[in-house]
Image 1 (cartoon, rainbow, N blue to C red):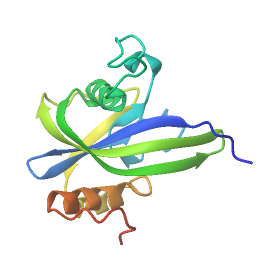
Image 2 (tube, rainbow, N blue to C red):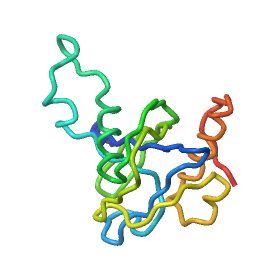
Image 3 (cartoon, rainbow, N blue to C red):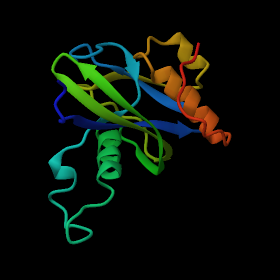
Length: 160
């Protein structure tokens, strides 16, 4: 039986000048070392619990705060206009993760990699991303982002 406990993560397909930011995971990473992906990370209690609640019982924008923090930590960029793309339930040997994939516009900054997380980056179109060894599903998310930007909100599907 699957337990009802998931790690929560959020990722950003960051767009700048018609291209998406992809990064290569550092060799020391437990999952997918040296594979290409998009920036993101785990929701941490500090992303909301250290802030005042927005209502009597709740914090709003916790995931957006996490994503803003993670993108800044991993690649040194500020983002804006975060919007939902798709969600993923990933199954790993040590449990499950709920991953929310978002599209975000580049706001400011120069790419500065957090070496413990990532060691290379590239700005690519979904077509150009075929040349990189991406984590399975990431190119599909880039295609989804391109479709979304053209007004097609039909949702995620497997691409060739």
